Amino acid sequence: MEERLLRDINEETNWALETAQRIYEKEKVVAVRNRSKIPYTAKEGVWDDHTTDINWWTNGFWAGQLWLLYNAFGDESFKKIACDIEDKLDAVLMDYMGMDHDSGFKWLLTSVADFKMTGSARSKNRALLAASDLAGRLNPAGGFIRAWDDDGSGERAGWAIIDCMMNLPLLYWAGEVTNDPRFAQIAIIHADTASRVFIREDGSVAHIAVFDPASGEFKGTLGGQGMAEGSSWTRGQSWALYGFSLSYRHSGKKEYLETAIKVADHIISQINDDYIIPVDFCQDASCEYEDSTAAAIIACGLLELEQYAAGNKAAIYHETAICLLHTLADKRCNWSPEDDELLENCSAAYHDKEHNFPIIYGDYYFTEAVLMLCNKDLFLW
Ligand code: GLY
Image (spheres, rainbow, N blue to C red):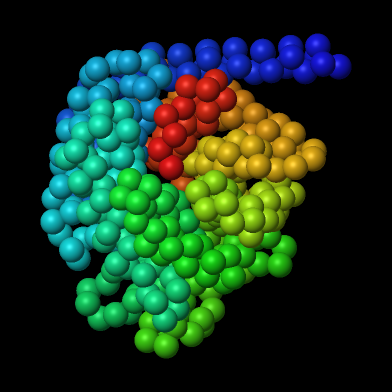
């Protein structure tokens, strides 16, 4: 039995090491021809460039992926491109109305990564400014971090979204490097509220929560990027799973572990035998909208959560993550160095016109999960 277990572990590590090497070989080529871009999606195998849309929430992911690969393989050209993107993001820090709650996605994967790898004081300063802005988005009456801005009308002043759970690690990081408990206190206020308002009895998760921004009264939830109010948008489920697991890691609050387990069990109960993840677990069986990004984020979340789960749950979480990653590698990865994207069949939102296309954060989380499996991960959250 123990011998079999050891063989499985060795096989799995070998698979992860080989897959990490494949990612590295591909990205070496992709990075050279995209060295000045900040990609979001690819059309016909060519990354687009969001440099002129510098506030866009996904602008840290390519740099983050390059930092992960630099840490694992030591390729200096990756570091150079990541640092150039970090410089470009300074324009966002200088644009108050262009800031939103996605500072974690933008600066954990650029400045915090740089600081962790090089000790750069400039990077630390940038990330602390971003963390302070994020902390300043707390609505004390409702106990939530405001998600998006609006044109100044206040229309979205009372909106929080589940995705924000993944931005809280920027606050935990800021608290650690400054020895100032305020940052974690704010993260915990938000996470407590999120646990109360987003998570349903069956472990499924809403996307948007609406509060009265003046009184803080909770008004209800919206379907957001999912199919409908009350449905189970898969990327939202994945943000909750990984986000609450990370909040447990940073705060030690048992309630977050319980929430992450509840969400994980809901997700696992919805996954089909083919391990292809739809855009919404409630969508019709005939609907072919997929989201490979959700598959990759769920894998990361399960690999994080398995470290804290008791009994046979840890094994179930691990096994599910492995099945998701193998499915992505075999059926949804484009391994050709001629094409820029790695993951295909991703979707931004159920009601968008376009579905099943490449999205950069799918590549990021797939890379992160594979590197986690072979103990080569640079932990950025
Ligand atoms: N709103 C962030 C996401 O699409 O997951």
